[in-house]
Each structure stands twice: as structure tokens, then as C-alpha cells.
Amino acid sequence: MKVLVVNGSPSGERGKTWWVAKRFVDGMKDAKAEVTIVHLQGKKIHHCTGELACWLKTPGKCIHKDDMDFILPFFYEVEAVVLASPVYVDGMTGLLKNFVDRLVPTVEPFFEIRNGHIRHPARNTKISRVALVSVCGFPEMDNFDPIVHHVRAICRNMNAKFAGAVLRPAAPALDAAKIFHPFKTWDVSGAIKKAGIEFVQDGEISDETAATAAMEIFSAEDYKREANKSFEKALKRIEEKKK
Ligand SMILES: Cc1cc2nc3c(=O)[nH]c(=O)nc-3n(C[C@H](O)[C@H](O)[C@H](O)COP(=O)(O)O)c2cc1C
Image 1: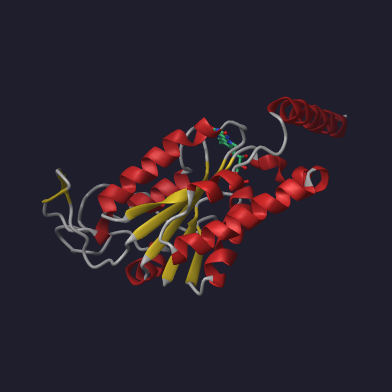
Image 2 (image 1 turned 60 degrees about the horizontal axis):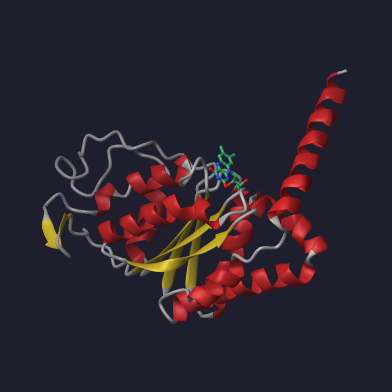
């Protein structure tokens, strides 16, 4: 199976989104998937300007000539897509939303009725399933509700199955977690990789695996205290440098 992974984290390979996504990729590769990875950080992708020339004047072709020209051929080739993004202000990053908006040339303008909704038919894509990989800074799982809801809706629009999500809350603590809770971190890492295997082999991520990937590592109280200490230290360092 060919899979396209799109990492919408502005931190690229340095970010916690990639910390999670790369383990998911390892799992997919173990399950013999052929994986193409695109980090949107540093790519030149103009935002959609809404003329819909890609439907009418130049069907299937966007008027903007940029890095989307190199990414779209992969999009047409794959059977599965992984959308990866940190939660930014309760949703996906602008980078990922920008990318998703620029997929409009991959559908036709005509309407069809699918599952009781008017939709656009795909132009020539063969994507049957989509998974979400997301991380966030707060420790509660409900911070992911809007992004999961959004990606589910995108799947309905794309006529693809939403195959589940690997969600990692309190992601900035992952490095500290490795030191203070190595066994839990090991379990989380293993579950993320297993989710990649399940996505390829079973067509969806099991609830049990997703729950292990999202397990609490630090209590909210500990997380709050340590995060506040490190914010204080960082502010002090900057103040001292100014002197
Ligand atoms: C602009 C901005 C907005 C953010 N908004 C949220 C938010 O709404 N909820 C949340 O839990 N974390 C939020 N975060 C925290 C990030 O999701 C978290 O730091 C994550 O690890 C960043 O991903 P990265 O490491 O791949 O860059 C935000 C971070 C930034 C920079």
C-alpha cells in the first residue's frame, strides 16, 4: 500500500508532531507500506485564492505554481493519507489547512449525492483511508475534539474512511517523560508504532492502541508545576541576557 504522510507542524522534523508521526511511519513500514513523507515546513504553498480556475478554466490545474506541483502527483498515486498536525488554537495548523484547501483541483465541480449529502466527485484519486496524527500542549484529550471532528468531515468530503487517530496530549513533556517515566514512554512509543501497523494491515487504528498512545504520563498537577517552572526559568534567562 502506498501512503502519503503530510506533516503540517511548523517545527518540521524537530517537533513533537514528528516525534509521533515518525513512530507511526516505522509501524507502517514494518507492515510493508511504501511511505512518502512531506514536511510542509519550508515548502512554498500559496493559499487558495478561490477563483476556481482549477474547475473551469484549467480543470485539475491550480493557477499557483509552487511546491504543490511536486506534492500532488503523490496524492494521486497513494491509497492512504496520514494528516499530521499539532493543535494550534483548537484546530490544525495554517500550514496543513492551506495544504488541504489546495486539494480542490483533485475534485470535479459537478455535484453528486453520496450518503444523503451533495458532494464533488474525485477527479482521479484512489484514496480509501485517512488517519490523523496530532499532538497538543494541554493534557486533556478533549483538546483534540475540534481537529478530529474536522478531519472526519474532510474524510466525508474526500469519500475516504476516517481510519482513526493517534493523539498525544501534553506533547512538550515527551522528552522529560523519557527520563522520568521511561516505561510509560516506551509503552506510548510502542503503541504509536502498533497504530501504524494496524492502519496498514487492518485498515483502522484500534481504540485500545489509540488509548495506550494517549495514556497519561505526568499527572496534570505535575505537568502544570514543571511547565510553569520551566517558563519561569526561560523568562529569567532572557531577562539576564538583556542586562
Ligand atoms: C500558536 C500555537 C497555538 C497552540 N494552541 C494550542 C491549543 O489550542 N491547544 C493545545 O493543547 N496546545 C496548543 N499549542 C501547543 C502545541 O500543540 C504543542 O506545543 C505541540 O507540541 C506543538 O507541535 P510541534 O512540537 O510539532 O511544533 C499551541 C502552540 C502554538 C505555537
